[in-house]
Length: 478
Image 1 (cartoon, rainbow, N blue to C red):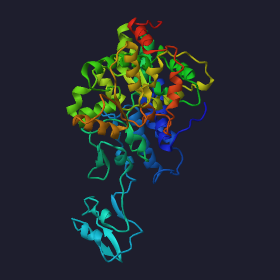
Image 2 (cartoon, rainbow, N blue to C red):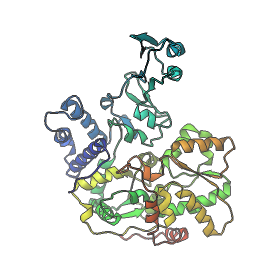
Image 3 (cartoon, helix red, strand yellow):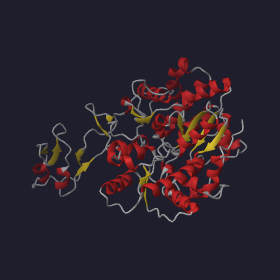
Image 4 (spheres, rainbow, N blue to C red):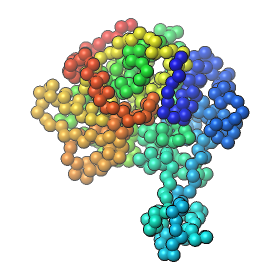
């Protein structure tokens, strides 16, 4: 099997935990052997990341636990590994080397708590008194006081992360939208998303025994993943894991675009519902806008619903770049059984020693160009406009295309005050849309044109062709 490339060693460690857990799960040896994984992955006696190999193994053991589904007393998708969260500087405001020890003492005079004094002609901040108000940093004429914000706190645009009494990262789940931005941004991998791959493996094995079909619903963002193999080869690899078939969520996205465009016409103003982190944001931070969320399913749930109408006994697993999708399962009315990220899919494929680049290509069920571009910012709006065009409607959709949760926040705030010059908010919590998801295999800036190129490969020329196919309840071969 070829060596996999990762953005960082944190992502590599996550992958190794997932892969080793999956290997044991396939062999039904997980309960007896999971505790051996840390020593297998972190061998030898010389530490490479922490103070000693024993701490490195202890932290990796927690990664293994999260790969196995986490702890029963914490149901949340995004969690903090406390033992791994201890390397960030504790003090938020610090005096840097540029301090000149000036006699004006503006920083000291600006501090409302008396936390600043001078020693050896340098300003000194007492962390016990400092309340991180920042007034000293503003007052300093040399900009010698730096404002240090932990990477996890900086990445969280909804202010759901703070430090607890032990100076560990603490997630306020009343605010957290499970977008996963903190997961990738933590340079020590102390913030993680829990995995359900063990449940998925067990389900695949059980369904193979009793003859139940398991379907994989793949996000269109797959076009920006797996650069070492073709999409067709990845589809073959997924089927080798035990899935009956692989269906495009983009096919259901066509249906959603068709329905959602009609809903905009009917209601006059609407927000999209396909991004679960955006959905969570409205519910937790702007509940006054809940009534304006589209009542249509996300493409994931819509496809799961269609599949289970065709086969009530079928099982459905969604595969994509999103951690928040794991929270959406609970809202799917049982039509989606599990969510697996692209990171987890890579680990699952490798746990079976499957090399996709050496496989034959399998066809992927087609959607239209417009269903596939749901994966990038602006795609949902373009699809809705196209749907109305195909219907012959002269209603004009004026879309506010929001890339990132901060843009979503601003658009919603304007709409709540009646000053937004748009009748449709397309909310994408991740920058550039799903192709910028936290559980992508790589996190360099994605070329949104890659999604458009993928969309142009679709056989369906318009949305209506996909909708007609779904309305006929297109049978999937048994």
